[in-house]
Structures are given as C-alpha cells and as structure tokens.
Amino acid sequence: MGFWDKLMKIDRRIIFLFVIVAVTLPLFLNISQKTTISYEVRRGFDELARLQPGARVLIPCDYDPPSAPELQPMAITAIRYCLDHDLKMIIMGLWPQGPQQANAALESVLGEVPGETIIWKGKTLTYGRDWVNLGFQAGNELVIQRMGSSIPAAFPRDFRGTPIAELPLMQGMQNFNNIDFVINVSAGYPGIVEWVQFGVDRFGVQLLGGTTAVQAPLAYPYFESGQLRGILGGLKGASEFEELAGTLGKATKFMLSQSFAHIIVILFIIVGNVAYFAGGRRKQT
Picture (tube, rainbow, N blue to C red):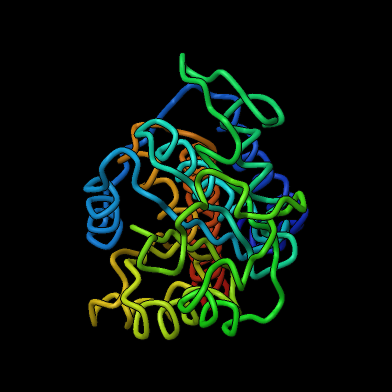
C-alpha cells in the first residue's frame, strides 16, 4: 500500500485526537485573536450604552444548562456591565432553569454566592435594591402579555417568596413603561421571537436579543425590520459582546478553541482531497 493510500485510510480516531487537542490546548495558552465586531452586535451594545445610571434593565434568561456554553457568557457580560454602570437588574425566566442560570452568572461575576448585601469593586450592592430575581413563571408568551399590563400580577413574589411590593427596586413598577431596556438570552421557545411579538410589537419594549448560533437566523428578520435593537448570535456574538464591554471572558477563550478546531478540520479536508486525487492519478498511470 502506497503513501497516499495509507493517508486516505487514516484511522478516524487519530482525527478525533487532533480535534480534541486543538480544542483543549488554546484554553491553557495565553494568546489572543482579533475579534471583528459585527453591525448587529455593535448596534445593540450602543443602545445599551445609552442607558443612564439607575435605569432598569430586564434580563429574561430563557435557556438551560445544555445551551449554557454559548449563552452563559452573554448573561455574565450583561450582568457585569449592569453592575459596572449602576444599572438596576430585574432577572426572570420563562424557562424553569433560567433563573438558576442567572444566579450562576451572578456568582461568576461577584466571585461568591450573592446574598442580601455584598461589597464588589468598592460598591455596596443590596438584593432588592440593585437587583432582583423574579424567578420562573409558567405560561410562555402569555406571561409577557400579562407583564405588559401588570408586572406585579405576573410576578407577585420573587424567587425567594418575598412579595415584590417589599422590594425597593420593584416599588412603583407597573408594566413595561417602567422598564428601560430588555436583554433576552434565549435558546428557543419561548425566547426572542415571543419577546418581539408580544413585548416589542404590543408594548414598545427596547430589546437586545442573545441566542444560540442555530436560532440566530430566526432573529435576523426582526433586526432588519428594526424590531430588535441588536443580536448576539452564538459564541461569536458573545465574544463580540465581551470585547465591546471590555471584559474578555469564556466566550473569547472558547472562540480561540473553535478557531483552532476549524483549522484542523480544514487541514484534514485538504489532505484528504490531495490524497484522493494523488492516489487516483497514480492508479491511472
């Protein structure tokens, strides 16, 4: 068997090994790659950057652990940005695991499990005043519709069971008129599409959507129509969001691994094609 024939019959496990090394090695290397910022991410970030300190930002986390590798970096960056710029966060979820994912993102940012009061970067942050977690509410898009009329009716208590009327941040909170911006991080249904249809179209919500790479194409028509202020699409969108926020995190690191893996795959495709044509020509001669 000739060299090209052996190359064409290479054990697939060797290819898998190369891919594993390509994905894992960059996580331990102190190298960086240039991040090109897309228009839809830039525009969404610019809308967020216009908010003044004290503005209320609603963050619906509509995803679960399987989607977290792509979406958790978006939630972490959004939470860190809000805390850095004194924006008040109202967290909720239309997915059962969403509020728990948000709490995990808070822990990643603050470095500890957030309690009633915490000191962070010289700031005293208090639950109920600087952020609240309303928890999960069943009902999908009907919850959004109800929030447009009355947020206290849709979420009478937070995830701890505290009546929201007792939370300083929620006092005077009636409906979407009291929300300055919405950052929806979602993996499917309910998610960006439902927030556009029932939040943006009916109640004029200002919406930035973050979603998985698979779901992102469904959101682009709403961005082109002006209904979405911006789109964070998959891990690439998350890394761009980190770049603009000035807080490089897991998405940026994972993008480096993804780039290395793509290079390995492309090289094997090239080698496979060269081996095929070279071997074919040799047999014909």
